[in-house]
Amino acid sequence: MKQLLVRGLRKRFPTKHDWLGRPCQFVDAVADVNLEVNRGETLALVGESGSGKSTVARLILQLIRPDAGSVELDGEQLMALHGEELRRMRRRLQIIFQDPYSSLDPSLSIREILSEPFRVHHARSVASIRLEKLLDDVGLPRDFLARMPYELSGGQRQRVAIARSLAVEPEFIACDEIVSALDVSTRAQILNLLRAIQAERGISMLFITHDLATVPFIAHRVAVIYLGRIVEQGTVDEVFSRPQHAYTKRLLAAVPVPDPTARIFDSLEC
Image (cartoon, rainbow, N blue to C red; front, side, top):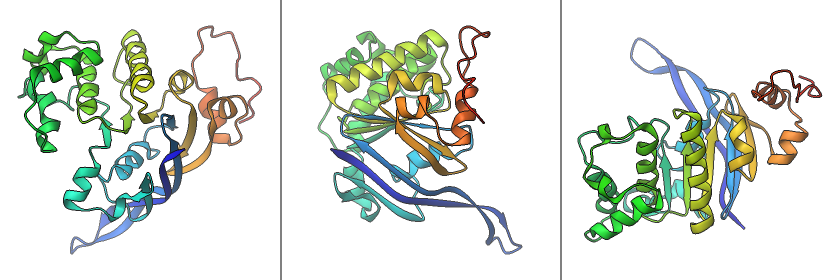
């Protein structure tokens, strides 16, 4: 069952202004993007840096307003929502950002960081047991509530960010390059954590990455974005074993393999 439906999404940003400060040149950051995410599914959105991946996530969550197109969650048009209606809808849609060092307020304790979503959404006062359960869910000790972000490693910070996104029990989470800043072993732990959370809670995910090696492990389907446009999408097996677009073939050919003498992608014609 389709939960999230994106159609004709567009966003232009000004690149030059005239002498009066009016924008006179633009770049299409996202152009005619169509995506579908089924309930309980992970869709990987892959492409190189600057391809428009993060902009798509922000447009879906209405952190940036699209210039055109539509975003529907369970049939409800998000672009028509404003103010209190949009705030209520955001309980169902959350995002985890790439950099765990800048996404957490360094002046707040972990307790305050995890309490913040409840305050934003006017939830009743948060009992410590509820915050402790969030830490349990992401594999962190309960005494971390008293710690500050600077006392945590990058992987621990990202676990806190995941816990924060789960606080209001969302139905959909956009994961924006959330393992790219982590070392290999920590990256695997976070991916395993995401899979466990999805299996337990049935959350749908948009997993944004430029690292195609992680996609088969975490995603059910994949969409390839190039210069703001979706050039190919399908199941992970379809796209990885039978890529149709030259850009997809080049991305797959660039994936590092454990044995550098093995030419896994020799059959791909770029």
